[in-house]
Image (cartoon, rainbow, N blue to C red; front, top):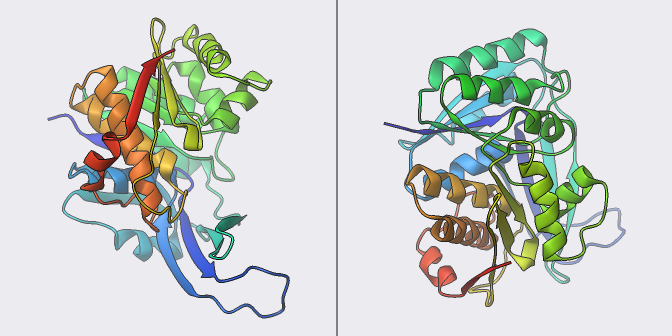
Length: 312
């Protein structure tokens, strides 16, 4: 039976701190704080689990942080990360509950070796079977070759596995050379790839099709509160939620949750409209949860009631 595997080369621990008013001060008392095992592929996996679908997580983790990631393992979510020397990075989010603005602080983490990368490729090769979906997500850690994602996607093709790619910078530019089935940049990442501002939907479609001309089959562009667009060689759809069914808690991980919805829909062989619908609904449901990727599945039907889809 076909399955979904996520790859997180650069795992993270997300620390979410809420304060009543973020001002320049020597001493600010947090209203609340909580941390989560994260990294884009981990977030995707948690969202897939939220859809009651089994998923496996491969990738790297700092050896001293391994227990944090093992703790998220459940009957549906299997964690099989390679422990490497060094510390898993910490991403800090400061939420000002008065202004409802978020400040993000990123730290650096472990450095991987060529041997670590070979172990990951070997583990993927042993785990993947024809018909599986492999989702390669996030940034490359220090020490990883720029073509690591390219190598993983080439392996996917050799094993008749469907590769999804959700990265940026060197990982994205290298990965698309090997023609992943689907990529999911946000608008800023697509603009960075193309090298120019994309001011409207048609410019986004044109940019996506320039990538499709090189062998990618689907480009899904996430656009924050403007929703997303789905582009193939022959069709382009835009989708957005016209009424937000709840108070936003955090925007972190919404793109990852969207990728999870797209993967589960693809595994279930849903048509384009329903695939886009599930992706947008999962990304939106993530807004109402502090933990990236973990959301209430019961919220999806309420969200889809306010979802607008149209052709571009």
